[in-house]
Image (tube, rainbow, N blue to C red; front, top):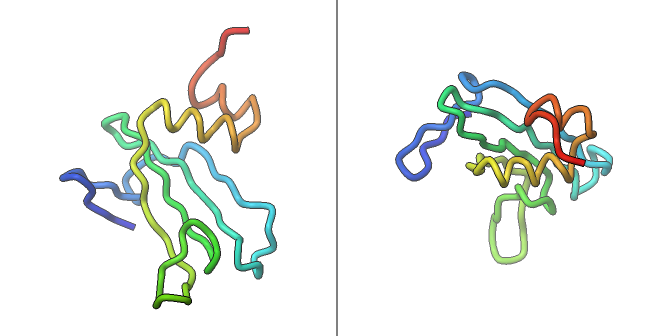
Length: 102
């Protein structure tokens, strides 16, 4: 997926996959979603997420209806670290951001 946000190109084909997260919901559940953390060659992080009709990635169809959707969300390094703290194991976090103080 490619998207221009605030004058910058975000492209899942050219960026490096850093981590992947799949929600605990069943794929058939309306709340199901999955997210991939990417890092551009410039060092900028972004999230590509997609999910079903009641996930944060849902697309509104009309006032009372939504469907599955997907989006790209630019992240600062701090936001990427926060996402990783919430979604990844300690080893996965350290692989991406390095050792952390005790």
